Image 1 (tube, rainbow, N blue to C red):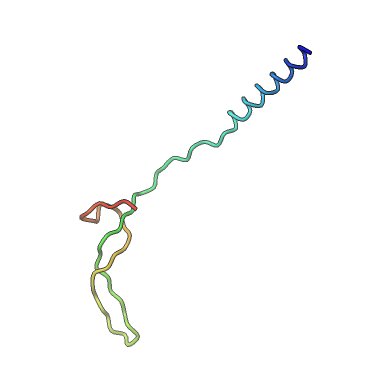
Image 2 (image 1 turned 45 degrees about the horizontal axis):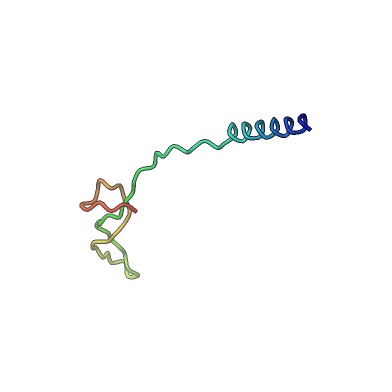
Length: 70
């Protein structure tokens, strides 16, 4: 009876060590923070005329006046 319990404990400890050793490593976060920025935009209509105005887009946070993280 004692040998059976010792075997179960040994198998459990080995399984826990194997699970801990094979954990996926955390991914290093090296993404550039992009924010909503106001930028000058141009659009061509169906007649070929350009229309220029201000619109919202995505870009590096250093290009905006107000910091809003997405």
